[in-house]
Image (cartoon, rainbow, N blue to C red):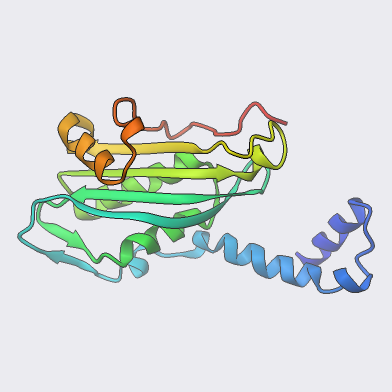
Length: 201
């Protein structure tokens, strides 16, 4: 990988042998491997059997989870907040495992729509809740640094399953609790094939 990065620097018109760039290929390789470490993650190891039978049937919310990912179209970062809720049926998941799950899928080449659905699907499959909801708010550098160059825009995606999809009152309660009032009436499940920055060069 380091040789490829040296070639890339040359193609960009730089001299990879100059003082400031001598160690850049090594640093870039290390950074990229960390930012894409989610490909090697094992969901079972991440959850580490932190599923517990608990007599609790109200909404569980973990909000304002910071996440950082790479847009698969331009390899530029997008980042923001993730809000997750579920209503247990018989089991709950350890609270610290939820941000770890976000990290697993965000540390891959992604589109925000797919990332949102992947997180929701794992929670739905592993704990079989009455309902699960994921909302992600992100700034995309492929939109703010290049292309349309809109620095203040951000994207909101959601995945709603079970009670959050079928019950408007439950959905509204969740959106109110994460302070997304303006989206309450229109939020919909994002299509898994959606592409946030398609149409741009």
